[in-house]
Amino acid sequence: MRYRIALIRGDGIGPEQAEATLLVLSKLEELLGLELEVVDAEAGDGCMKKTGTPLPDETIRILKDSHACLKGPVGETAADVIVRLRQMFDLYANVRPARSLPNVPALKPNIDLVIVRENTEDLYKGYEWEFDGVAIGIRLITRRGCERVARYAFELARRRRRRVVAVHKANVMRITCGLFARTCREVSKDYPDVAYSEMYVDAAAMDLIRRPEQFDVIVTTNVFGDILSDESAQVVGGLGLAPAANIGDEYAIFEPVHGCAPDIAGKGIANPISMILSAAMMLEWLAARYSDARCLEASKLVNEAVVRTLEEGKVLTPDLGGRAKTIELGARIAGMMEEIRRA
Image (tube, rainbow, N blue to C red; front, side, top):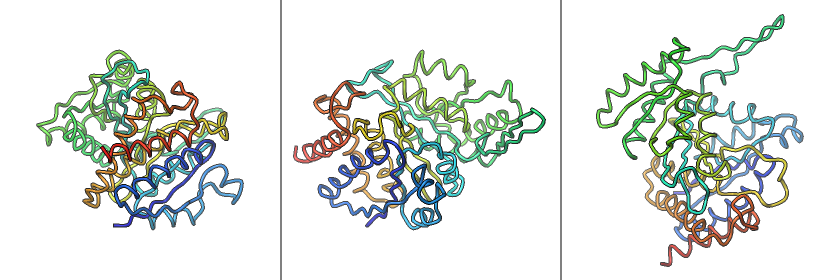
């Protein structure tokens, strides 16, 4: 099957990361016969300056006509791009894995967790007003939103270590977090093979530092998940290694967790691994959606090549203690895939 992939290169370091990731995707086509048609789509700050809008209609059309989207980080217009796309395509599950990697400083050597964050509701819905010195924001939480993200988390846990913890603050936000907690408990009854527990968000934030290895799948609301996933990324070495997926029933967008890092943009020293691992998540999603074993093999190959490249430690960007350029690390990961296939 030939897959049409929309590519939003983004702002800042995004285009550099995208070029390195394209080397990896091109190598997958060569090694596995994967057929990928990558179509550029503009969005973000640069697009705003060029066209007057951060998310043109043409970009939306390209995304609708593609099987999936791979997106680089966007700058100040992020809310007008990714937040809008999440709601437009109903991408209700934001999935952010965090695991210990070789030769990368982490709090513990055996961390392997995933945060599943509700992605379309909460305060990020943008219902805010200000008048007479008073600012008001509405926190929108629905039973439907809670149930579907909870089910996604439980299904994911069944493919992992079968543990789910729901994170909320129902002792204070009794109605909104209360609905989320009750719904998660109800859903848990349909998964007796998955161990279920709950934590308040402040305790969860503390335990991500104190004992992160205990976590398997964390399911939580939008704002809490945004904060905790950045924390979990730092726990295992930093945002430069952190991929993410925005997943709905019909479509998905994959992107690095971090921002566009304008301070190092254009220097060619950004770590591309976050975007390369996002591409691996995209391939895994395509494999599941289209029952394509070749895509699954490709995803596993990318992940293994990243691990082995870090183990080797010869080609690393400055944030990892090396001197390599962004494109050089991408090329080394692509080369490592070839070595793995030959072995």
